[in-house]
Length: 399
Image 1 (spheres, rainbow, N blue to C red):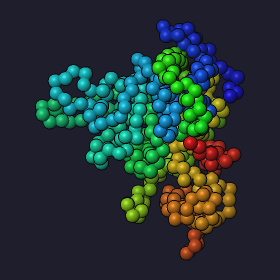
Image 2 (cartoon, rainbow, N blue to C red):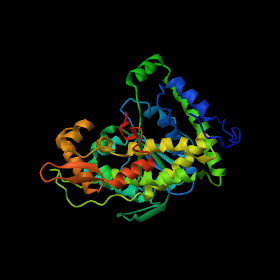
Image 3 (spheres, helix red, strand yellow):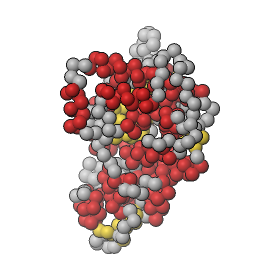
């Protein structure tokens, strides 16, 4: 990767923990893991570094199949400012226990990064527990969570702001409740994997797991300390003006394209949807871009960082929607079957997805009985301005 010519000076010896550069870190990772997707590593580290910058937190779903490198990558994230848990319950953040000191996790998370190793298990919890967890997450994102208990415990509330990286499989894509209740708070990064190469590497290193985890943990702690300390010392990471305008367009179109259309179990629309406004994702992308610049040792957010933000935006949009939008981009109006064929989606599925995009005012519809579809002018303009519609960017979803 070619960085811009304006660089930061990183002091690799400024803390008690031995520090290392990004390139040194990637070298150690590649010794133990099959690394095809180094950009995902950058995004993970930038999310971790972002807890040292002011402003609203960055929350990230790290999506990958079971057995992929996401488990080892997150296992290696340890340190004073990182807290790892296996999953969440309705009592995780604030306990209802009486008379037990330090039973509440939330105040301990302030200014830290929370690693959730298995968010997939939350998706299978019974509805009441799942709803309570999602409600806690929504309130916690805004910096304050309060809960009331009986049995003499009363009301307990804490102010706390923290980052999250939550590991999950692509099963999350079929759980619409996650998108409707948490979608605005989480960005997504889908790991690009090569199963055969990953299996070959794991087979070659069988029996060395303890050594691998020690070395990965030491390296990750060193690189995290180095760049998070740098983030705390910086007054400001500049964002190039042209990049800032593109981030605004990217946030706008991504927010609209990931907006939920409420349907019942028979797939009937419950009410007319309102598209998400991109203010929250704009702030998240700006903060993540600044963290990436620190990790890349760039003095400002430029093309290097924006490429990763494009990746995040693409990964945060439902896959089948991006396939349809890619087929419609710069194309003449087409009927439902044609749009579905180009996107490699069954016609019935394409019909529902196109209706959703139409209700969100992202596509135009013409005709009486046989509808034809075309991207709305504003959608095309945002895709062009953000760069999300160029060079087949939308169509590059990979596992």
